[in-house]
Image (tube, rainbow, N blue to C red):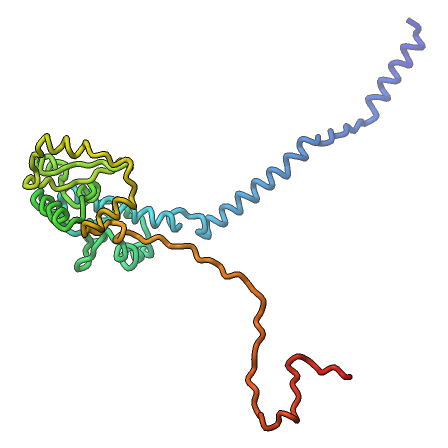
Length: 284
């Protein structure tokens, strides 16, 4: 190789080593720029949420839903213990202890004592203690049978099974012990009703009478003919005691406005006064 070129190469290396080099930093990409506002938003929303939670606006234990949830839990507990035969009353502290609601605030306790439990239709208050108040307070199976018999005598019909289970401790055992003294009827909404089975009203009907009864056709007879026949026999139909049909109110047709007539006074001045009821007189 040419020695002159080698000397120039060595001189170039020396100049390159002696000259300081400054590296430029890489500019931040767009992805980093977009991420920063998101982080700032997340941090701001987190701080906002923390501030709101610190103020108590989103605290679960201070919300109205939590209060009414505690009330529902207390009422359900009092109902369950009544159904199990525990009918003695409890203080509020005992109720909170047994329902494990010991972390509620004094304000909520005051609300339960002065408003919620006092006004609840399923709770009664006696000397500062609370008990469950069912629709029918039944002690045993005899009380249930008397209730059904009373409803039957007064024509009130039956009693809902839900109401019986609510007010009679160990109701399933009592109903099973009564046996055929009770009749079950299931409504279209699947709810069961208990009726008193009055065995004194049970009688057999002669088969010939049943055949005669079933042989009378009533399909061609409308309600008006049946009503006329009952009136002839001196029997009032059930339609008279039922709800009356309300006839639609007919609106009056708007006619022409009637001409109003005014009383005239001062008859002794008939030739002097002029009548302006029809407007100003036309000049001739």
